[in-house]
Length: 120
Image 1 (cartoon, rainbow, N blue to C red):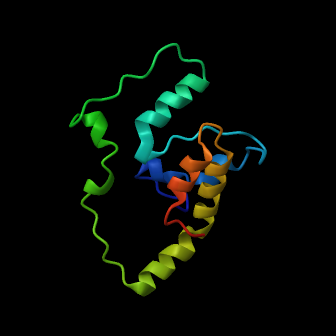
Image 2: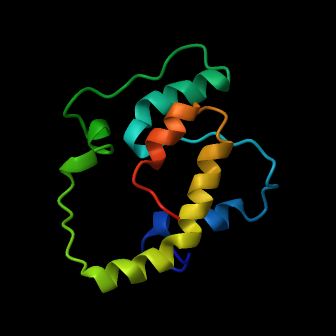
């Protein structure tokens, strides 16, 4: 989250690092993990795609990218650990909320659904 990981490339840059040079009034397109394939199709249509993206079949490698609740992660943080993690993530969550609100491909309902349970 701090943009310092040399060994996990997709964690090296946080949202702030990606947006630092982007003017705040710039529209963005967002693809959410939980809605990966539908968002991908919608973004492609906005960008002028002539046909839909082929969506991976159930149980395929492509579908597992969007595993949702089937991930083997368990919550072992105590209350103090959660507070520390929340403090650490506060700015990242604010930027995430800003991205969702700026996304031209998401409806108000999409944004509300994505924000359920998120507090900044």
